[in-house]
Length: 93
Image 1 (cartoon, helix red, strand yellow):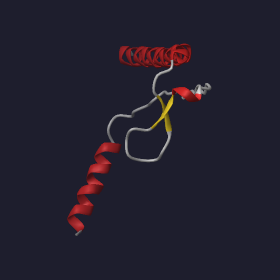
Image 2 (cartoon, one colour; image 1 turned 30 degrees about the vertical axis):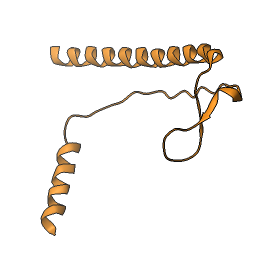
Image 3 (spheres, helix red, strand yellow; image 1 turned 45 degrees about the vertical axis):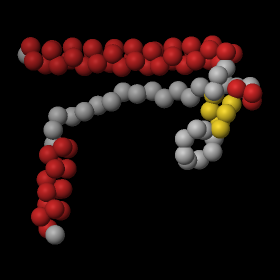
């Protein structure tokens, strides 16, 4: 009984004592109206919600969403580059 608890504690300690990990994220919710004729019930088991089956008018909204995601990715890459430069400066000292 004590052995599994000790092993779990050791694993948690090992994982949390490793190098510091930082994440930079930005969540943007895009809400656009979709015509009702393009919505269909969810095909998978679970809560009944409507999903977009096919909507040619929705292409512009998807383009906006992709742009937001790409901007977020660029922010993360810029942050990562800045962190790498800081590490190089610290290693150079």
